[in-house]
Image (cartoon, rainbow, N blue to C red; front, side, top):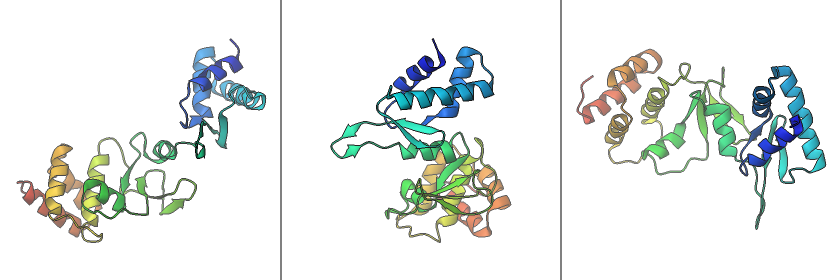
Length: 218
């Protein structure tokens, strides 16, 4: 089997709309043929170009440098790439970001208003808030580097920080937050530690109100 045959087989297995990353194809190629990283990258680039030029995968489309996808014709035209998956891969996974802002409050049931802005706290945003116009999201730096252990805690504290700033219309917001904390198995001691270190006094007070509703004392 040639490099192109192998790459062709990989592309044929890809679901419609799913982002296809050249670097991931190259990793598969490197492992299968025992190539080094540089050899695999060059071989994959050549193989994908020949496949595209030859129309060997007719529904394969170019999205941007290093990213392709397979499409399908619908009554409304060609199906595009899955942007939610692109957003997740670029800013959220694995454990490098989370949804925040009004979208988070809406998800938690604290606000019925559907926000226009899609805000993500992510380690990818190094110094300031900026908008990724192509994906339609705004990203901002987190209070502290996000990892698997603190992600749910920081997201919860972000929601508490927003309670006095956002159009919250839940009747009992502290009960909503207490239920969320319980369902996710979060510990109030760790929430308090992070709130004291990285958030303001108002967030600590919101946490105290939530703990009271949940039957805990801080």
